[in-house]
Length: 515
Image (cartoon, rainbow, N blue to C red; front, top):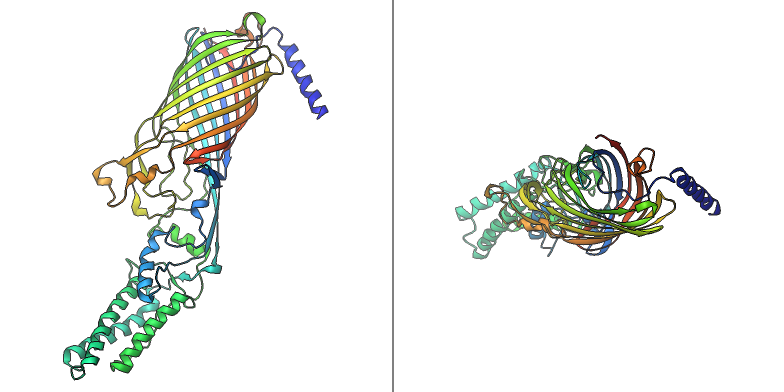
């Protein structure tokens, strides 16, 4: 520690002696008249958890379940209902096993910007980022509690349904021919057996073989539900053969013997013709981000006057951010993008106040996010495996974002300072409607997309800032340059969903005189 302190002190002395003629400062918002500032900024953020209603949860929490079934896979709800009718098990749900999902997201953002001083107070600027974003996910499916397996398919059921249909047809012929008329009780049994057997056949065919409704997963033969299916079929066979004289029906439905595997589950998700039709992939997305342009107005600049440290400085910025990036795709499970998909109009006020080696920068920001049409899967955030039929075009009006940041600093030298960050931001709730009547999905309220969008967060950080105005100041010399590095993370959040981001930011800016 002492060695590090001595080295830091030596560095501070060298910087101070090298720039004794310079008027050191924090990086200014605007630039002097006739000066071009070239800006190179970079940011790397990673997160594997998020704040949900103020509680930190793993990022894959919505994709995990102690008993994977129709709660996460709504396409299994029809199978649940049919198995319940067949077996008589009240409240039955297919259980594919314990699903655990781990997700890690990261985003790297490099930005090139130019700022030009038109007058002493007015600066125009533009920035274009290049973004690399990625989401990595891994699934673990524990079959220990599973009672479901992969549907064997219609080919394995041909013999069973052939015998069932022939037996029911024979029973119907017997009833119509009066074969049971001499015994009213036997006739009543035949009629009720025909009705219940037909209903059983319809449910079994829809569950096992119908291309339009067959479930990808069905109860295993050794499970309680599988045994109940076999018992129901066996009871029908016994009644037909023993009580009604209809023989030849001895086949049983083919049920799986092995539980669902992880690969079976992923194959269901990725099947283009399946109920979910989503791609599970971790390919990074590399594309430009949302470009922005605007103007900065320096209101007051009495920073480091006449060689003294400190003073006061204030500036206001206005910018427009354009949707030049790409939004996350609705047909991707781990969807990542490089932009928000809408135009923003943002206003920011920055003020610096200091005396001697200490000071503070205060930043207030308001971002009006304008409405735009986007493609989305209209489902709750807790239903990431909702069907592909819910993908449509919606009109999304994101909530506006307001923030306040206080950045105290302590100068180690004229040009070098340690800077802390304490930031609070608040985002309003989104408003979502269908883009047109043709895009509407019956029975689905687009407002489900607004759940968890209203939130607040507190961010803390620390970093270093370096600024040497060089020849831009009277008596100064050398190439004007400023740079900085910082680390920030979310420490508290309330309301909806807030990524628990750990972010490293760096910037480098150099100034050139043009006129």
